[in-house]
Length: 162
Image (cartoon, rainbow, N blue to C red; front, side, top):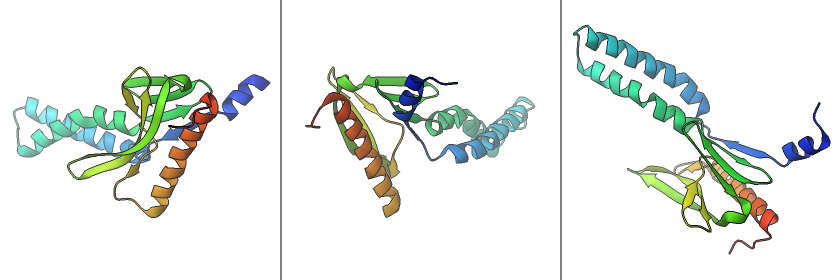
């Protein structure tokens, strides 16, 4: 049974997850299987262009899972950005600014949240985010989530966001 302090802590905790989790759970085993079959074929001496592609796709599975299983947790201590291969924590008092920026590459990208720290450096949050080409509803939801993060920061530090 949880105590009153633990329940209050859980009530102030907010978690954002990436929307690609389900797709990653579907495609990762398929890509990994293709990579394993290609590896076996190469080891047996049967090499084709599809095998090269399969080896490449199989090697990309850890990267895909790292991106897809990212989450951001807000609690009383600060912002916890988490991905399977790395973790970053920024305490509320260490946050200098929270902005939304477009992060793109090769015509694809997303509107993401960037947290700048007083000591320098910045942390891109793995979630929430909105694709550049997204619906108005998704863009509005992302804007509301970004505003919620900023409000929580201001509430914990009495900052005005400037």
